[in-house]
Image 1 (cartoon, rainbow, N blue to C red):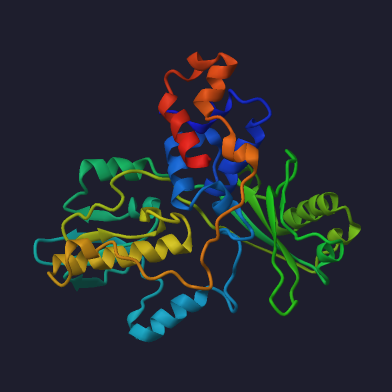
Image 2: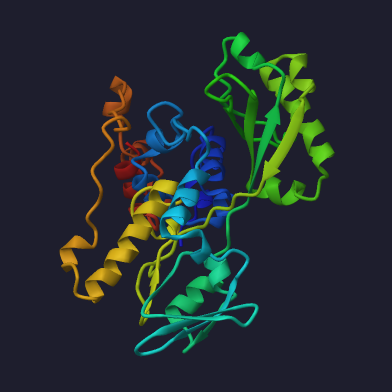
Length: 354
């Protein structure tokens, strides 16, 4: 398998950019993810400009009031008493005419069909009767989560805006904890904060720091990045632990009466909330098709695009439009033998990244 680190080693000066791209988007180091998986991930989100864009891209918008409103409204619609929290499933019995889920407290729930939408490593902790097919079982054993700590540093004022800065930064500092920041000011201007990601190896290395230690180190880093002592005096700090999954085949294939959703099974915006919505709708339609309620060609139908949130084309420069492909550039430099074993990867890079 061609890993991203093998691909990047031939490009002097481009290695850090490539490493940062991997860390930000899949929350691991280049040697931990295959090149094909990374390229597919980028394409599913419309390319590198779209997935990394603060304007007209993945990082552009937030929910007023928070995205948890989606879960709250769904629970209200189906009945809050039917939503069971703190009932982790420990066993699934996939029978011929029904499926039974058992939680850690011994409670059993019977249904005609079941959708599993938990992360792959969590699925690996469940006992299955009968056992999973060998291909999926092996996939689950090889599906670690990416590592990232999401931090929020709150200040009395958005000092970066006063300096004419947007708050977004990509930080190239081996000693610094945070690798990427975004402005996190409420729409009414309240609760000004900088959101920062501690990525990949750094997340694993510094997860044992106390909140105060992490707060101090991040504040000093922001002081250096935004060139002001105001960053040294946050009024509040908090963190979360979002985790991103990596990508494998057979993710969506149903097993008996058990179907699979979750953002990692999406074909567009995998790893994002958009992907989670697509995956949930697709899994529900698979069951409807099995029940004979819809046709097979309706499984992948999608909702109309929101007229207010349509992606706009990106402007490209003359050099971007006419740049040689990666294989062409290597041939020009006389080093094609370096990629003889990974030529397909070079072609995919050209196809997906241009």
